[in-house]
Amino acid sequence: EVLEAFRRDNEKIQVSYILVTPEQFQKDVSFDEVEGDEEAQNYYAQNKNEFTIPPTIGVEYINLNFPPPEGHRSPLGESLTAKPEPEKEETAPEATKPATAVGQTPTVTAEMKKPAREKANAIFQDLLVNPDMRAAGGKHNVEVKSSGFFSMEQPDLALGWSYELLIKLFQMDKNAVNDPFETPQGMLIVKITEKKDSYVPEYKDITEKVAEALRKDKAKAIAQKKTEEYLKLVQDAFAKTELKDFAQTVKSLGLEVHQTPVFGRGEYLPLVGISKEFQDAAFALTEQNNLSGVVATETGYSVVHLDSRVPADEKQFEEKKQSLSEKLLNERRTQTFNDFLNDLRLKAKITSNIPQKKQ
Image 1 (cartoon, rainbow, N blue to C red):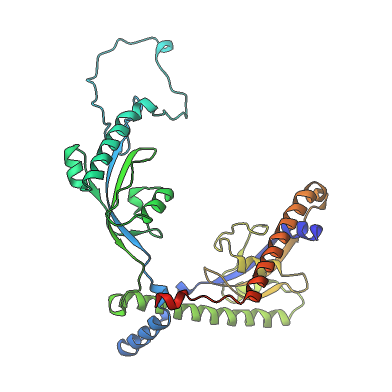
Image 2 (cartoon, rainbow, N blue to C red):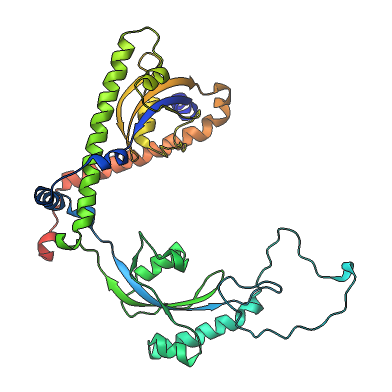
């Protein structure tokens, strides 16, 4: 088993394929105003989850920038400390001038961060008494900014906030103020001003969005049907000759052929990306059965042809055998334990009253 796993994990292949994307057929999708609206409403009713708006928040925030290192300006604004007037200096010998190594980024020391930290803490203490960001901003002579609604899935990129901070903010209640959060640029204080739970909009509010989704769905169906037709043409062409040249056959049909680099399982591929469906279909091909069926991926529909296979170098097996054995044993233990728990749950016949309680 370990040897087979080694071969599977380390073999590489190269394939050629056609890719038929739904986008190229969207222009061919049309429906009249009356029937189209009825069809769109039916699509909305059957696919409501597709239009779910995720939880969103709106915020007010104060950003206190750390002062830039000497000789550098902050990308987000001026330093908290006043700039001294420039003084005339005598030209010093090159050996006595301070220098920064090429490629070295100047750092902001803890002492340089201290004024921003202290000011952020003072503002936060005031907000604990009165959570009015505008009042606190006016008192401490700092700008208070606000955002529109944004979600975890589509954050406000202009804010440039980390994923860690976003998780924290989405867990807070409306009108709550987070304690000062330190970023590489400075100190940040955020108040949740608006909060909306996840919901499905009414059809009348998203008619254009539903129509676009329906158009894409129809284009997807056309792309799948076209790919099935192309596969049949390739199969018929192969049946007529002993020399089964996939690339030449595809080109003779007026289609574009793509070829991957030599790749192993889990590797990123141009155009396709990391598609389990595509790779499963590709690695299942053999010299005797070197043409796939229609393969659905995130980007479209494909027909895949095996060009070559590079087997795993079994000279490396001995050095990788132990670690691979441990990995497989851990996977087997986890699967066995999960199966055991599932069996217990089935035998226990546990029932849940939570849905009734919610109703």
